[in-house]
Length: 426
Image (cartoon, rainbow, N blue to C red):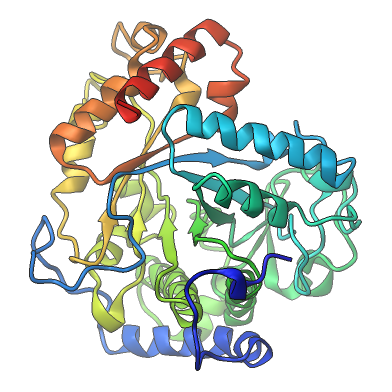
């Protein structure tokens, strides 16, 4: 296991691991709830951050250039032995370096499970085909070692609520999956199973899982994706809402999500203030607020003891000129990026942008005539990065690794990689 003590940053006087894991979830959730109860969800500052502000030690000094490696990538990796997995991990890291990336966002808990040794979650079925079965080695340890030996950062990507996305994913749940251990925490939406965001004990468990990761592994950060409330259906948490005495369901749900996200942030910082905690929300701020119940504007503006995230990385998966059937071009790349950049943002909070590498060769589905052709040029991503540079954005991430290195459009992917490398390695 890659112990946190192996990092160059010593943390004398921190919590002991057992005490931290026992108390971090409840304490962080309680602290977050108290601050929210005081109405201290956010305090706006000017954009860009002021020079006088103390720099956030968790943020890189240069451009953040990342790629998401998801459970879909793990499905194509060889987990038959540590040696086989290490060879695949080494190739993955070398490929990331070849296009000038400096950060790998590795999905390590996609379905209430783990690609690492955990006392809280079962082994992922991606390791052996059976959830709960020990692969005989620690994949996250291998990933960290291979990343750090090449100078790459590795952030652990966690899906906080999802236990199952369909009846076949995962194929079967382990006995110690939370769906079986705490069914009272779980809600079903279609074929999916999710922790109910309205249940504090479930949120506390998620925070304990974050604490376990940052205490036991030399990750450089924790990353949440955009899966928060799985539905807008009022029946999902009707009992909890009625018991709360709150009057506004949407505002109450946003508070539930913010309490969890802030508690996870605080658990990361309690372990090491130089570790990053970030969230990748949807690129549509209206959906974030009204469907996912993610108060992204408040998260960006919150600072000091009220800070919720170190960075946001909204998923801007649309091309230039992207047009809805209604004729709206609000979500065209050249329009939605400035909209995000104009939001009030704390000096300690970074704003990066997720780019849709999976659009290569496929298009973005817009009503504009070039909604596909612009993604067939071999330079779509590089042109978006150049636009981000011109706007002063602090970094970007590519979704996802396979779209560039195992693409159904290999010639286009080759050209996209070359164009990115020309920008990042010059």
